[in-house]
Amino acid sequence: MSQPRWGLLLINLGTPDAPTPSAVRRYLAEFLDDPRVIDMAAWKRWALLNLVILPRRPKQAAHAYTSIWDAERGSPLKYHSEDLCRALQASLGDEAKVILAMRYQSPTIAAALETFRAEGIDQIVALPLFPQYASSSTGSALEKLYLEAGKLNNVPQLTIVPPFYEHPAFIRASAAIAKPVLAEADPQRVLFSFHSLPERHIRASDFSTGCLASESCCDQIGDANRFCYRAHCYATARALAAALELAEGTWEVAFQSRLTRDPWVKPHTDARIEALGREGLERLVVLEPSFTADCLETLEEIGIRGAKDFRSAGGGTLTLVPSLNASAVWVEAVEEIVREHVPHRGVSTPR
Image (cartoon, rainbow, N blue to C red; front, side, top):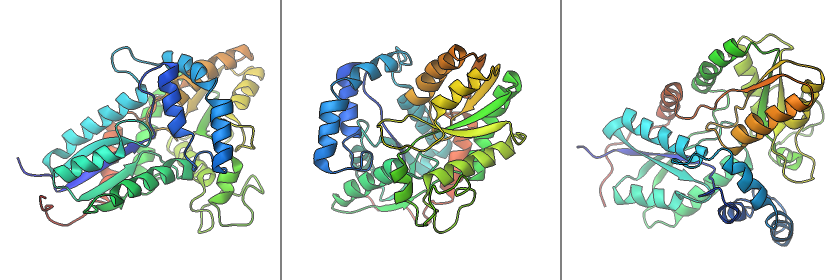
């Protein structure tokens, strides 16, 4: 068997090891202590985390995780990501070594880099599995990757796959997953729900003076807003709506998973779901194109709680489109996206 000449590092966010308050607490303690996630002075972040969030949220979140946890495979985000890793390895064969790492908890980025080092692979293509750029997701994952790589005596060559929010392969795969669901559900409205961010995060990534000043500020992407998460989300939604041939006025965009009382990007998904229910909408389909793998935010927040809230408000059926997970169309799309960034040097020299 020949030695892989390059490595593919898949990076996802992370998940608790178990649906228990103690495991969720460990996860949240690491996740929310990241200054890119809660961007405030260290003492303020410590106080918010240890005096407000950690005393009560782990128990609540553990209950939510229990509702989606697989008795044999565990966390959906983790096992879908592992399945994707295995499928890509099977597709790439001996050409590359594919490893999955999580930004928080396990498997760690440091362990992945050590595996590459031990196998003599010093050319690594890193793919953060976040379609749209945000400092709190892609930015944090890359910061951790650079930090861990910099600790090695021989720093590997890192090639970063940029955000793929409107890459044709990503849009094509997402549309392929959604089309049969839409055909069966026959929705009166389609809601594209993206993970939300505090408004100050959006402004911090935008170089223009009119950020969030109007509803149309994200209609186009240029030099000033090329890192704007909100602009990326709207670009994804427009591309998907076109690929799905959705008529104007039949789809909309909203943002979910608010955490603090600070102003977060609007409109809020939970508010829109309830409003559409109050309007008596019978059939609502929700797509979540900021998540490449199903997780707490998709399965529980929307698939369970969102559907319940929709019915309670007077609506009918809320149908959640599955994430890309490890579907064949997504495996094919990831390989297409990654191959645009594969290094073209010869086989790495073993250490």
